[in-house]
Length: 219
View (cartoon, helix red, strand yellow):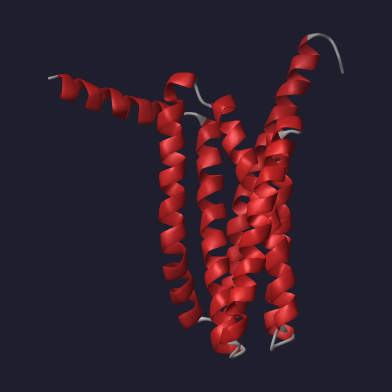
């Protein structure tokens, strides 16, 4: 009986979380950001080995992505304490999408893409990802009731793990059907999804503020 009651309470908590607009937006942003990161890691590694035939340089590309990400997760934590977390996520996703779209142009018009370009892109992509994650984690307690925080965090973390495992599979399918340019375009679109959600939230907040001001006779 107690187990059944706990299960019902757990379902109700999940329902209430997904009725919270900002949590849903944060969840979608986490899904697409993690999915794009996993696809990016896969396609960069695949191109270095298969496209350029530089198996020896694979470690360099992976380090260029991982080390800045680890370092800037600490920097991102400091920024998240001092700055607007949603703004950090907003700018990070927009910048990452821009990097992915630059690679689209390079793969369409400038193949083979030089190794140094991939290394620089990996450094920037890892840096932006490291800044994004602390902002996402620190904004969660702001948008979720304290009683639902544990479940909300488990949903976000579980979604990230699913995205990290499914990203290479999706990237492999897209790469086999189309090519590198379309795959990087897909990564850019995935990064623009959380950007659009953040933009929508900012516009909505501005409209609410304007309505509040007008209610006080301020124009």
